[in-house]
Structures are given as structure tokens and as C-alpha cells.
Length: 442
Image 1: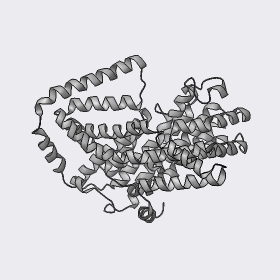
Image 2: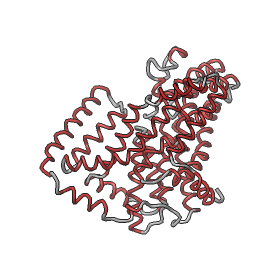
Image 3: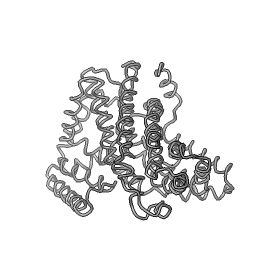
Image 4: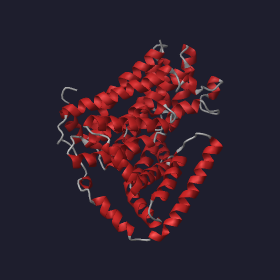
């Protein structure tokens, strides 16, 4: 990290936008499948096209969570809370640490919330910093918040650890039993890895801040004018204020459903419940239905890139899985592995596959059976093997544009603004993650 500014500038000039990135990955996956599998070009084209719709439900969920989070953040009461939170950061170091820790805590609870909250908080902190002339690098702050997201598979939001604890998961028949969270999420080595990984994220971001000039940053133009949002809100006040009763009533009905869900299912979060919770609270806090509708329209424009890019990643995932390439890659690695190296190979292979298949559930369905079978043969702890794949899945999310779309949408930044920092964070966080797996395997 002796000359990070040069690295950052180099990457900023060469990193394509997320849509272009997705197209490059599509061409790369197509080329790899044609080279290493016997699939015919016409069949590959058909598999790609059929898979474009595979994530439509998920795409809608993600577009909706970005939109309703945007609306909630732009209601008057939430703006007040965000301003008060942002004012707690009296120095650059406090700002970076606040965003990273907040992102991590929300990511451990429910993985979409980490980048969403980090994006909103980063934006508000930077607005206050601009006004107070506090020396904060906005892209680095957002990248730090994205870095806090790297621990999501280690907590309550872990798709892989929760999958193996649920009947009917892809490895249930291979193992003959479930793997409870006491053997994965609640182990001492996983909890230690959370702490050490977050420490590395914080240290990396603070060191980067020291070496990068304060004026060498990008701030969206709308953040430089403190009157922009206020003027918009005043204009909205003049329309249909009498419909507040309807917005409050609708919000209460939605939240009543959410309360009933929790009373029936316990503490069980999913994307739908998060969306309806945000929707209900937003309706309560909006000044009217017209106000909510206007904010929703603004938020929908922010979420629009999701609708365009996620189907392309579904196509990439379809090519990798349906051609057999991903399974072939996994089998090769498990065959050459040893007891000492299986968790490490699981980690790095999951990191590579995650670039092309950014879905924890799909990745475990692909890798889980082979790695669990190898773990049984080599006498490696099954919970450790599971978390090795989970660690790899979360690790390269830091350099996967698919997962960066929400935070980019809410901060107004482009991929090139944060990608250099994300690459550095990806490199440094590999150390505590690998160390945790190695320590647990002793």
C-alpha cells in the first residue's frame, strides 16, 4: 500500500461500468464453456437465453428494496435521524468506522440491509462533511461501507449456513443429518473471524485515507447544494396533504402483516419481509400518499440498473451450471485436495465461482455435495467445510459489480469510483478469512 493513489487512478481509468462488466463476464463464461465442455454453441445460446429469467423474482425484490429504502431515507423523520447520526462523526476516522461497523451489523442481520444502510449513511455523512469542511473521501467512505458487507455469510443472514441447517438442503442426503448453526455460525473461530476481518477492513480504510489527498475525490453535484432536497420536500407539501390518513392506514395494515409474520415464524427475515417492513414504515412517515408516490418514483429511477443487469448475471449463472463447467471445476479441486488444504481450496474456489454465480444458494447447491463428500473422506469438520465455501462466497462480493449495484445506486457513485478500494479490501480481507479457516482446521 505504498502508493495507493497511483493504483486507484489506474483502476478508475480502466474499470468499465457494471453493465459493460456483466457483458464481459458473459463473453468470458461463454468462451470457457465452449473450450472446456462438449456443449454445442446453439445449445449454449439456448441455455443462456432460458436462464435470463431465472432471477426475475429476486431482481424484483432487489429493485424494490432499493426503492423502498430510498423512500424511507428521504422522509422527514428519517432525514432527521440520518443527520443526527452523521453529526456523531466528528472526524474522518470516526466517520469511516461508523459506516463500516453499521454496515457489518446490518449485513449480519440481513445481507441486503448492510449495503443499503451503508449507502444512505455514507451519503448523509459526506453531505455534512462538505458543509463542515471535514476531510472525508466520499468514494472511500462508501467503499468502506461496502467492505463491512464482507462478513454477511458469517451471521444470521448466511444463506449457506442456514441452508445446511434446514431439511431438504442439497447436502442433506450426502451427510445424513443437518449441520446446526452451533457447528458453523456460533463456533469460536467464526466469531473470531468476524472480529478480525472487520478490524482489517477498518485498518485498511484508515491507512488508505492517510495516503489519499482529501480533494482527490468525487462528490455528486446534488450533494453540494444543501437546498436541493429541502426545496423538493416543500413542493411536495402542497399536494394532497389530506391523504395522510390513507397512507397511515395502509402503513399500519402492512406492519400488522409483518408483526403477524414474526409471531408465526419467529425471528425469520427474508427479502420480502424486509421490503414490506420498509414499505409500512415509509407510508407511516410520508406526509401523504402523493408524497410517497413521488419519492417512490425517484427511488425507482435509482433502482433501474438492477432491472437491466441482474438478468445478465442469471444468464451467466445458467451457462456455468447447465454446461457442467462449474461442477467439473469443483470435482477437480476436491479430487486433488488434502485434509489440510480442503477448507482453503473451498474458500478460493468459492471466491472464483462467485464471480460468475453471485448467489449463495445456487453456489452451495453446486459446490456443497462435492466438498461435503470430500470432507467426509478426508475427515474434515463438516461445519468448517461449509463455512469455507460461505467465506469464499462473501469474499469476492467485494469485487462483484452485481452486489455493488445497491450501494452505487444510493450513493450516486459509479463503479470506477469505489472499485480500486474494493480490490484492495478484497486482498486484505483474504488474510483473516484464510487464517480463521486454517486455525479452525488445526
